[in-house]
Image 1 (cartoon, helix red, strand yellow):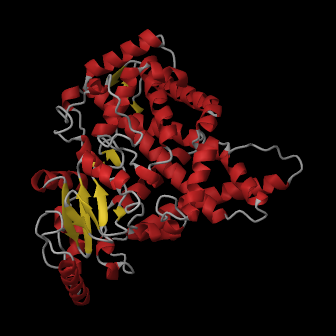
Image 2 (tube, helix red, strand yellow):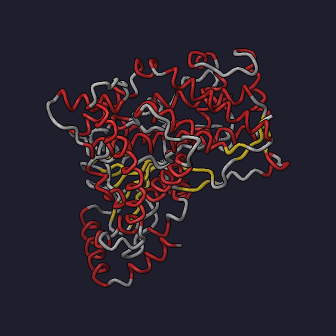
Image 3 (tube, rainbow, N blue to C red):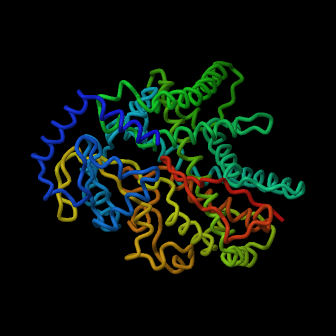
Length: 499
């Protein structure tokens, strides 16, 4: 409703209307609609903004079912191309990756100048390549992940202990919150050598709310993105709220960085060899001061994206298993046979648990954490699927629709992990039917860690406990509604009772 009200406000701004009309007219002359992909006829001035609704991944899927796997929309003054098939996603993410490797920048991420430092939003450039190199070599490389197995083991043991305490008290476990805390502590220990989710304070809860606030605000349809004259006005307050969220998080990181810098001055300092030390060492080796701002925004990317996506996927997986008890029994039978009932799993065990891996893949297929991926921008005019994608157009890949494509998947709305048994389809960006992490040069750098953490956490709590829904709820009445942000969350958080 807030978004629709702002659209109506736009119509009252005469100057804006004239600019939008003229701009729309020029664009229409430059690229005839007969050469653009098909799509619903745009209204004057506002274009197809009313088509988005409050769940754009669903609205755009319905439009693709009507107009085809590539459609064009006029969102205010922004020409937007939406891709909803694996074959066309491959053209964007692989064949023409060099054309679509940069992003359209939402007005919201101008908050705190985040887009100027963020690996997520920076254009492909030397700064972006350096950040990717740091992530790939210092955080997510196989040898680094192998060396940190003990940390992950400890964090999973703490998760099991927390669930066991809930079992003894007879209280349900909030699955998303527990997964968020575990992932947050793992990442913060990797980066800072400390647990940010300390039991003695509410950091985990507060940070989860802040991180979700960031994802929600960035993911909201924002009229300022579609009418540039409105950017200074920030009519929905998105940039203002996001600035507040960024500030809370960056103040925390700034305090931790300054504490480390002070510690390093002491003669008794013992290097931690965590990511913060690594980055500070790199700055010293180059004989220049490390830019704290760059470090803070990098940590914001890593912790923001890593915690929210992992906890959301964990919650969806548990929800689907509880809604399909026969799948839950099958998963526990595999774990009992391979691992032994009641034992946490170790990372080398994951390869011996094909059904557990299939559950993770099926969860990603049905509930991709970033349903529209992140927006791309056409660097050149290019032909895709027989249609013209004009230079400067915003390109959205509807991973949610790709995962529900009945032309690729049998019974796509049913949770069926068995479809992946014996299948070579994975989430590494090679199979475009399943692209929860994107693809091409901008594939999510945290993929290797996520694919270790998710089966480790999920498999351990399935093997160590039996589960039931709280308050006598039954699978048939479970609320599986989602809420749209940059990530796709359960609209009603999942609580389950361990036995």
